[in-house]
Image (cartoon, rainbow, N blue to C red; front, top):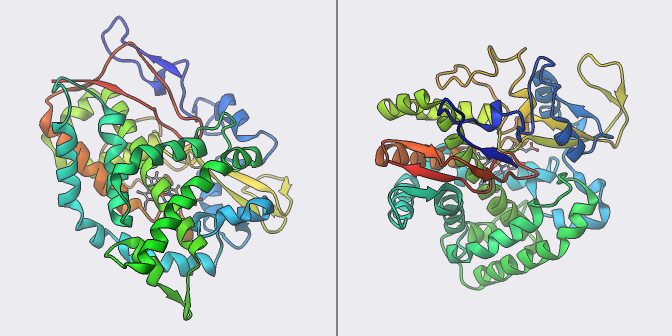
Length: 402
Ligand code: HEM
């Protein structure tokens, strides 16, 4: 948590330049290894952590030695991971991903543009006042959830319930989503979520519709239908991965534009720069600050002497890699025209974010509409910004609009 206020100069202070910063990564003269002690503690200091860009990229590209099969660490919870492609290795990963990848290509996703624009306009029109909004609850949360629910074919009106389940999964005080204690605590909520989705899967078996759940029900791999548990797990990851992260990206974008008012005016007069600006937001405020892999053999990472034994959980800090001065010129500078910008915010390799085209499209459209509708967007001063423990972003963000 940190206080958002305005200093004597009237300029807003922000998490990145604030002494009590909340961002998971603090880059300082120590370089990108300087993950804040807080965040390291949260993620479990006893584990190996990887911070450099080249090391992180190499690990993500090497699924043979760095597995995503976390079930091997928590075999008693393996059933909960069924269908969760982010926690799967080839060949099953590639087969399942292949089933839905067509639904998420930039070309297919582009077909959703009108719907996303209409929803954004609708959500803004519903605001009780045109002079203020709470960005997360009013727009950044409902927009991606409604889009994802519509793609899956489940009622978007149940979104308050999705939030309860998502919060149970992601709001743990011990900020390690790979920790066994977290999975234990979240188990009953995950079960409820799965029961809810299982009903929809059963319904589509009886009454097929035109939606992703029906596609998964009808899909076959080598002549075999997917099991219900796999479809439910897959739908869970799409719905959860598909909304929390995009919500954070929109919040982070406004934090960056409030901190850099010149960037806000530049984008207002040149909206064609919005896509590049969003990539820069993803780099400096990566919604998913870290991911992890399990070693399948004893390995050495980068130029370090120490080897990591087989079967170890290794934390890969995407946020740190994205601020590595060996990879990015002036990494602390928020440069909306940075090019190239090979950030790792969406991961890399076979697990590269399936929803990246959708997240990009939603955030581009929402930001363009916000900038068009309002001639100035500021973060309301003196509000306490509560941050997520596992992810990089704020839970609510009150804005003043002109
Ligand atoms: C700004 C928004 C988003 C960010 C920053 C983000 C980030 C990521 C990252 C870092 C990974 C790789 C994890 C790893 O390698 O361990 C990933 C994978 C994934 N993301 Fe996203 N994501 C976003 C939006 C979305 C959306 C909208 C969807 C909805 C479809 C989605 C679905 C997925 C899925 C299914 C995977 C697993 C892919 C695989 O294992 O093959 N994400 N995401």
